[in-house]
Length: 288
Image (tube, rainbow, N blue to C red; front, side, top):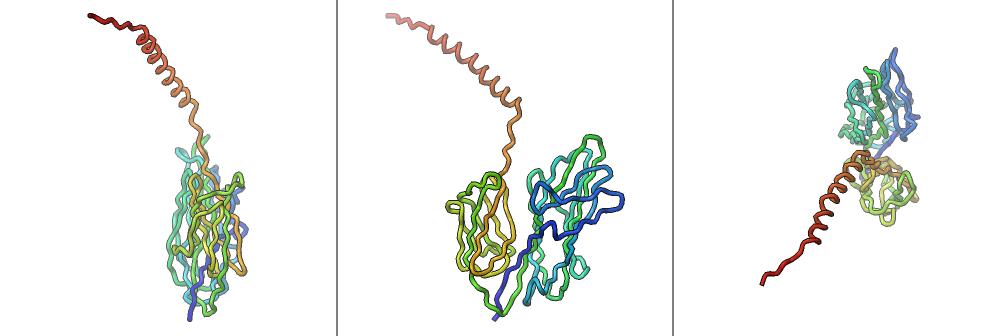
């Protein structure tokens, strides 16, 4: 009898080496965000690639049969941009030197999740490489752009004859800025696109019993916070993860809005108050 096991890997920046193109500036490890590389728009342009120092050994990573890569994902963010700037990023996967994925990445003023479906059997694959390409440039004085690409994650599955051990999983969700517990957040434990367990945080925590050991992706959705995804390892006898989610910044209203609102209120007072006074001064004459 074969048992399905899930596999997931979110890479650290230390897993990669950076190669800079000749005559160009180099992409950098981001100091603002975790597991993130950034490319600053400069002149000459920033252009380079981040690739694994040690290629993934698929037979060791997935010690079984029917090995399959399910999805690949990376988050993208752009700061600045617009006229006089240019940027581009791509995620590439290669199996034993042959390309199996090359996709351009989207970036937004808020984090954008780029998630690609693979569903590719890798039983015959020995080594897998992950490559992130980044480019950013400016063509006008004063122009500014920075792109960020974070949390490169692969999800997969394989089958084994060894029955999995079932493990209790405890997940605590907190505000990344304040450390406060986040109540009512939706939490899903996923294997690829398959939801293994789901629930909402009660007092900031959710517990799942009898989860098969393996690697999973945790997805968290909460109002007022950025969507969160990260791979975790579920191993006996039990696991407890504290998940830090980032609140969405509230953009303050421009000063002119307050002046406009104040002006409207003042105009309303000027119009309404005299009319009230006039109504009070009106006399009612009764004709018999």
